[in-house]
Length: 476
Image (cartoon, rainbow, N blue to C red):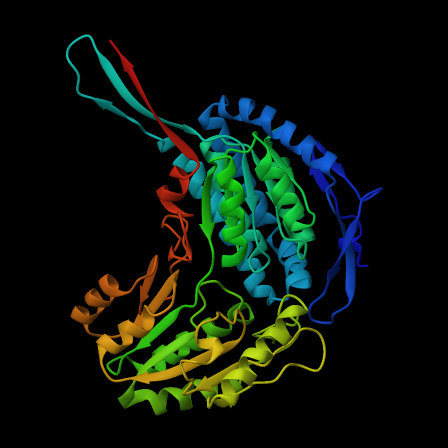
């Protein structure tokens, strides 16, 4: 057990509580596979105490002056920046991503809090036109206590995407980060408390995910559920939320297509797509994965992609020379190996990688060419360092393939033809489309999907609105 993981705790009802008398779960270093800590699991009594605190905290926080709320969020953002190195190191040790990416994630979380600190002061309503002596106004108010359930691939940033708008809107929050990454999310959470957030306004719990989510969602205290994760779990949570008619935001992943047209700057495009494919070992819900390449440049694309992939330094994320770390948990290498083996058995060619590492949770960065449509990986998101490729002849064929799956989170295209770019933006079925760019997750823009990739948005004014209810007040 490392010193900085020695005393993991819950924050419930105004106090940090350690694991005495509670079940615990192991925390692993994915670069080595060794156990580095034990995280305490919240008991039903802990969850009840968290719910009671969130109920009290909502009454307090919604009545807090918006300028004061904004000042606390700005102060929290400043602390995140000051502590970015320490939080980033915890993140890398628990999750595996390289240290530079981990620090960037913390800075992204800080940006989210700064942006929503300002947005809190712009929660405007409107006045309707009425006869003299009458008034009808429309206002926005906080929805109430929120259950925020976030995943392990971006444990700090994705938690910030839920907490920042919820707190800005005036909601209290019970956060359940992933059990794989408790130290970095706890360190992030301490920034809020040290910035002056009242203790009852935010709670931090860990535990068996299904048990915690069932307990929280069943409570009448919780008014909103925000979840980022897999499609099957999202469907399960939607059923639970439906019993209480609770508002939900669901970001359920995807299987992002990338359309590469012959008129693109090929070397520039490859220099962009290869690092993005293997960022965070491919464990990114908007990771470019299904590459459809126009036939005239298909062979050149494969050659350039394979050459760049073979040169990618793999290792412990704490090593400055590393450009791709391990997968985050022990389940992933076997799952990815099964997908790669299925694809090659059905005729795909492995031009780079294709094998798991000899220790830890590593899997080689992998490029598969000529992947048949009946391969499992063409329909199931690998969520790992595997790129799959096919060629196409016409734009219509490429769009058909991009839209083929029941998912629609993100999609990308590379072309220098402006008319084509406009058509692609309209025709591709996704919540976000990046054309000649991967910069689609920013504080001031909505982030969310269509079809089975979920609904609702995080980020932008849309993300703020999801934590508000609309009320019409009529006075004669």
